[in-house]
Image 1 (cartoon, rainbow, N blue to C red):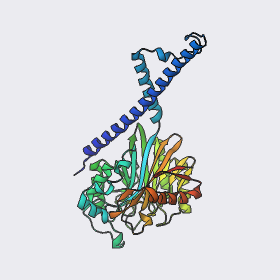
Image 2: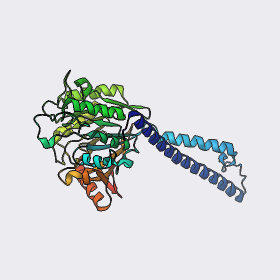
Image 3: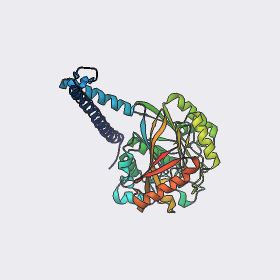
Image 4: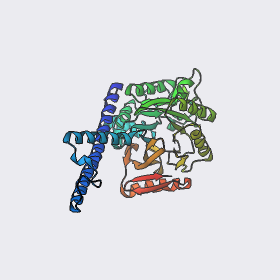
Length: 408
């Protein structure tokens, strides 16, 4: 099925309405329980007063809600429900973030056999419940272009454009293109990728037809808040760097420019999310440059740093109340090692007080490299590893059933 912008917008609106209805129901139930408790307390107080010879109208019986007419009671319930809903959602958005997505190799064969939604089908219900879902698109979405010179053939990818249906179905709102595969098949394949994403209504950032486009943050509005997404890559193959009139990526080796972009975005947005493609492949440890730069990005105005490239998980850190994920690992990838197939869905609430309710849902990239939620011993193994590599930062991960709850 071909996914266009209208289809994507309609499906996302339906999901958002469903989430809103659920929240209203929850708030209404809470408000109703509160009113029932008030009524019971009022009735109980009156009865107790009568038993001791006191009038129900004496000061100890002070709950007028018990004698409200039905219309006023319903009105009070609605006001309480609205207030509870506002308190629960005001200033907070729920974010879901995942690692590297590859729609070539095994995922391309899966799409050919089962359709464009298949690669993320098993995790889509978990991802699309968030207000904002982010991923790194580690491939082009094109059937055109020539392989770039200077890279080994086994490291050149061109993903099936039909894979965009997976992004839409999983509720992915924005993807980073700032990585070492965005130009694997040259300018024409990058153009195709941008066109496919635009048609599906999925925003993108980190690559473009010139440096201005490559460096421009993606701007999204979620629950009345303006969000800027800034990305760049420090893994830059030859001919990938963008120029004034040359297609390419945002070169994150220019750390000062990343910082300047964050500061400029901070002036225009309520929330700034930063993502760097960086680090050492297959290393569970963030290097000293990653640590120093992540803190510098937060000092410049970033609210959260969500990154990738090592192809394995790296630890979760907190700095000044702000969340740092040095590597989210692979997420759709037929990776060569078992460890590289272990990953997680990072989910958290982001508000004025920083990241709260941070959780990790473990996944394993099984047949075709597609992510599958894990339970039991497999879930504990993946979460245990994430806990171990996060511990040096002072971060705590408590395994609660099949998810990890993360705190500073």
